[in-house]
Image (cartoon, rainbow, N blue to C red; front, side, top):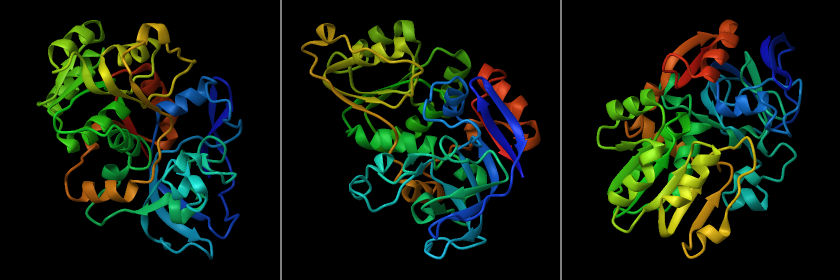
Length: 344
């Protein structure tokens, strides 16, 4: 089969690989019908994910059809349409039982697909712990509607959930990239008093204004003053940092009111520093880390009911044979690209 492969830092390449086989009775083999490119794939390419294994097939955003299941798989059957969770988790360890599936202690636990084991920018993928990592797609939900459920939409939903947003809150979202837009869609479900999106790209600001007309937008240079003027207590009650830059990391806590919650959703290319003397007295609560993607069934239900629609994020479509072209477009952020659907 064709598989887009991590060769070394700075180099991905299309390779022919054997079709995956079941290695464990809890595995499933999924024929990928639609995949996507994530910024995390670029982090692997840039050498920013030390645990990524050269030679693995990249890609962790995908949907497909179950081809084969191990003897201990009970929640999905061959022929079923499924989303694939970015995280592999056993469902049985201490962390899984408490909903912290990103910290699963299984050898394949956490972000494994497309990082430590072969992922989904290929015609087939083996999914360990399939009962946990696969979710059936409702009949009235298309592959494109479900494409982001297992990763960036799960991230946005998780971020909005742990932010503990109330109806009186001003929520600031820093970054209107793909994950930021998914976070926005999920914050809207919480119905806060005010949502402000900070974004440097004029194209992405225009996207927010067209698709989310009730949301306020502002650029990074004006953000701090704007948030102070358009909030009730001298800053945002909740800040979601989804941009992943040094400047945006600092902006996140600067724009938060005292005793606010700052949720760090971004993945950074380099370490960030908290200048604690400058922050003294703000008494902020930081919530950070990788997504706990255990809400996929609920997200699919919301999509089926029409409460969430991320299909406008798909701005470009390419076949697998043109994935290198798709990567260049995505990495260079050309032509208004937000997300790309890779078909098989």
